[in-house]
Image (cartoon, rainbow, N blue to C red):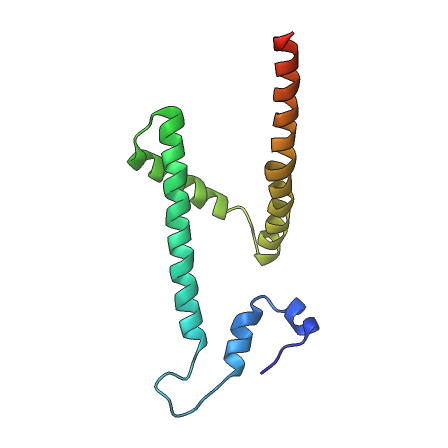
Length: 126
């Protein structure tokens, strides 16, 4: 029932592997990872729906397009983007790249905008 650090680094889904290692015979459900996958699917679906709605709502605010058409547009973009990675390694590399983008978008960009606004206020006030 336990995984070492080296095993975790080499596995694609270590949590599912850990759940598969537990086995209790004689109960109604013997495969606990089924519950884990059901919960993960529900969590993924609800998160995806919320993000899709926010993207469609943002497109409505920016361009004035109806939300229903925006949802179809966002769905098409997500589908086309899902065709790009060829394997799980490329998905993992893209995930690492998004981590760096997060730092730029949420740390460096607001700081840069703050500096630009403060410089602009100095020059317009004088």
